[in-house]
Length: 54
Image (tube, rainbow, N blue to C red):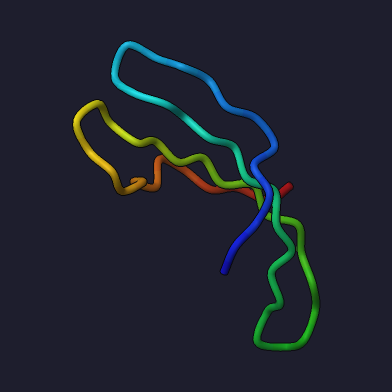
């Protein structure tokens, strides 16, 4: 799944990205989801920091 980055913030640990998405639940309902990811210095893969309803 690919989504647009809503915001990017440089931190002392690496770059944080905020992603807004729509998620379909098992019942077919769609909900907004915000997730925050970080790519630590010296790494090339993002790590999930947190996710919450948007």
